[in-house]
Length: 206
Image (cartoon, rainbow, N blue to C red; front, side, top):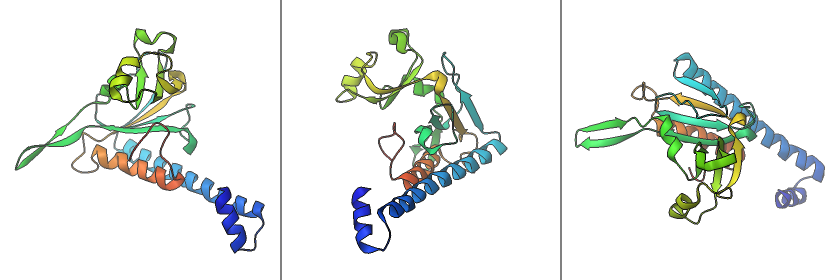
């Protein structure tokens, strides 16, 4: 930001503090707009009874037996752009033959078995880190991460389940009429990227 301020300060007749205030206003506005758009999306799915909100507890997560997109929030708070941690999907189309594609309805609970780029720590092997959401794998690659996933330093960040809120958008029931999981995931991530110039901290790609 400082380099940008230096450039703008040379080009227009505003003080450095005024320029900082304008930039910060734009950043805050874009983040607020993202939340408004996201809330509208939640309302759209709620109206069709295709939305589940999970307030996590210190126990295995009880996922809906559906496919779609899941959005993970920290601090039990979905009202702040800065609390969004991860956006992911499950379920996709695959070709059966030249004339047919089928929907592979992998359900939300399959996410429990991932160890990169995040892991839901629900094994007794996790010890005092059990029931935490961990992300930022420290292994050099997937194979190494699989070996160290139960170690306390296997991830850079950890969030206790008690501080997590998860939104599940069910798109498997109406995928022909509305969204595919991939389209909805990309829509949320793209809006997040446009609002902040970054991805949620546990997402590595779009």
